[in-house]
Amino acid sequence: MLDPKWVRENPDVVKEAGRKKRIPCSDTVDEFMKVDQALRDLLPRVEGLRAEQKTSGKDLGKASPDDRVAILARQKELKEEIQALSNDERELKERRDGLLLLLPNVPAPEVPEGASDADNVEIKTWGTPRVFEFEPKSHIDLGEALGIIDVARGVKVSGTRNYFLLGDAMLLSEAVLRFALDHLMTKGFVPVEVPHLVRDPAMVGTAYFPGGEEQAYRCEKDELNLIGTSEVSLTSLHADETLALEELPKRYVARSVCFRREAGTYGKDTKGLYRVHQFQKVEQVIVDVADDERSRQHHADILQNSEEVLQALELPYRVVNVCGGDLGQPQIQKFDIETWMPSRGSYGETHSASRFHEFQARRLNLRYRDAEKKTRFCHTLNNTVAASTRMLIAILENWQNEDGSITVPPKLVPYMGKDRIGP
RNA sequence: GGAGAGAUGCCGGAGUGGCUGAACGGGCACGCUUGGAAAGCGUGUGUAGGGGCAACUCUACCGCGGGUUCGAAUCCCGCUCUCUCCGCCA
Image (cartoon, rainbow, N blue to C red):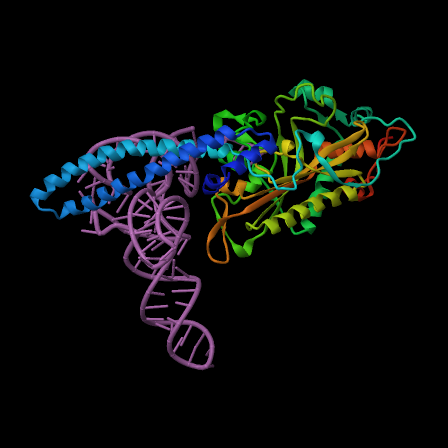
């Protein structure tokens, strides 16, 4: 959420942000300006009447009988006027807050122009895609041949985009996740187990709602939502709190199952584990003071942390600076890491590092007390460390052998207890 | 799931419908005192929004939402949450 005071003074900057992000908001901004102005016109009137009601009410107790009658008559008038105006006030406030939730965060100047992921700008590559001296198989062919990935039965039991991981695939998934978790712990991140079901304020606070309702599984009976990423619970951890300066920055790493409806993606990435309804993910989140320089530093750090995981697993990847049109509503800037996937013949998104400034913190009412004892909204950031199914794709396909077996990346051998999957 | 109790400021804890943004105690901050500290004494100590260069001032907020009333932390209704007991349970 943007600062309403700031929007009031910079409506055109918000409109420009919407244009760059391809999130049309010109009308919303205009509407906001109108409602906001109406509210600001109304407020002094209501408050003046309330003040009068208050003071003359106090006089009533010690007034003479004659005065009482006059005061009472005036109080009755005030009551009605105030009631009418309060209703307007509440309605205007609700409308204004609703509009505010729809406005996009302003992208950083270095966010490239562009309409879709095709316009993302590559800023770095690491490693070289392996040249196979045989015809490489896809993770799904490898996994089914080895009997460790079973999509057909996943579909039988749970419908499309579901799967079973058996034996070494399950263990490999565990190994990657634990390796990722351990790596982040060496960087001082606190490991956290988070709630997978969250209330609406957590979804709204992290800016998945309003707008993302169709992507989330909803347990209507209990008014709870299944998280699509632990970012939701983890960033909400300190919601409605005022943190002390000394305890910042907060660095957390969580592992969770992620649930995604993938509505509107029918026919996209239908084969294999690339796009599924459920997967596991290790995620890093940082909460710190409202300082652009520090946020940028954290952004670089969390990107680096994830790159180190891929480097340790010797998986070629590239980093892209996500363009405006591919950026979500809440982000200031986003770097995606795409890992080489032989079956796609291209890099596939495996990580997404975002910084938000105070956009989420404002919605979450997540604050801290600065050196001058003033309360301010925090800055938040997050990045994937490892998402199980997509990492599985990358490992199986990049580390496959001609006989259909898989060499376990050396760094994972201690976690797997073996250096090879297959015959 | 059944029964009961409760929800007030950083914490504990009072509060008769107007004099309560809220007694009292603790904590914390600053000052005095001291060689230094403790004790003691004094002062201060919420958030958000509006107005003023500023001192300052106005409004809202005592779990949340309604209602009664000229006026509600205080009365009424609904909801949520917490705790205790019973049941069930990985």
